[in-house]
Image 1: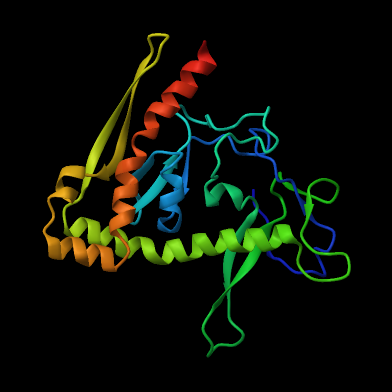
Image 2 (image 1 turned 180 degrees about the vertical axis):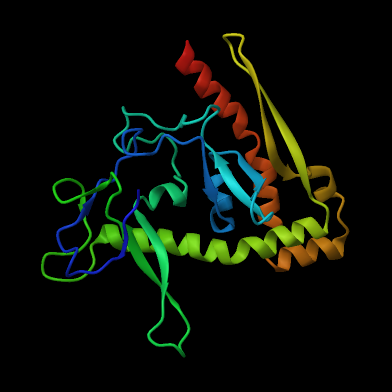
Length: 242
């Protein structure tokens, strides 16, 4: 269950959030939503896969974190943060926070505001980073979370246009990922899509320029480059089963 409320410095003056990542704190997930605004950083650490939402039939991006259900191979209790990669996906970092929309009146446009899930396992009044300063103002941690939520908010506003551009150029193709582990176990990951590197490279100059002007060309190449991180996941998995 969740208990989302609008965050404020009166009701939530004493709230803290545990900054660590662990299975006990809800981070044992095999994939997480990824946003165009973080593709360049994500591609250094994770495979970026494309999936089709079963309800809307729209494409969305995910960062692959594990090879089994409820498996996150980047979790490591030996690390101070509990995470092994240099960049952590925004949808993980945000923890119990999310973006809501609020209007001042019926005639005004809605503005993004910060909500918090009070029932999230990382929310505490004893442990973690404070959200507000003792004598007023937001804490550095909450300022950081606000910047992370901005990455998500701006990414959500961009992704439909990006995927539409990729689809119009027939760049999105299904991909089946074959996994062979050192213990002899074999498996396949299906239902995912990626960017066809050959079609991307063969685009005419005007089409490449159009993608570049909209900021989508480096994002397409980031998806392509990220696929090499599947080997990294397999290596981490093999090290854990030895």
